[in-house]
Length: 86
Image 1 (cartoon, rainbow, N blue to C red):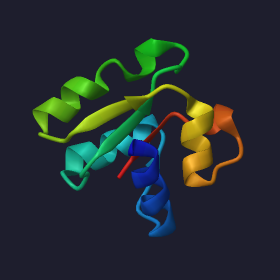
Image 2: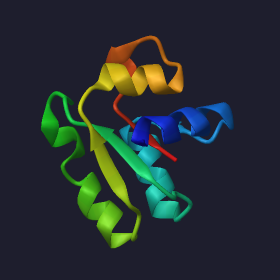
Image 3: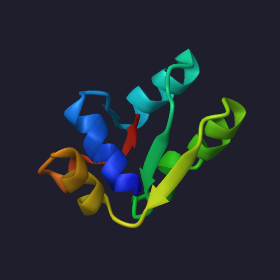
């Protein structure tokens, strides 16, 4: 289900990609849903994001693979995928 939401958001050009963009959008209060990949290396890159999501009352979910997340949003380079913000 999460990946279908990512596909829909990609179709409507509503995605923000990467840690920096995601953090900015969370701090600005304009994010509605947050999707992170569980196989990020190193994991420390995104350890603060669930806490920030909870602080801002933004629901979040982890998906198992950054390749699957990349395919869902139409990005072909899986190493460029970190997380997506809808």
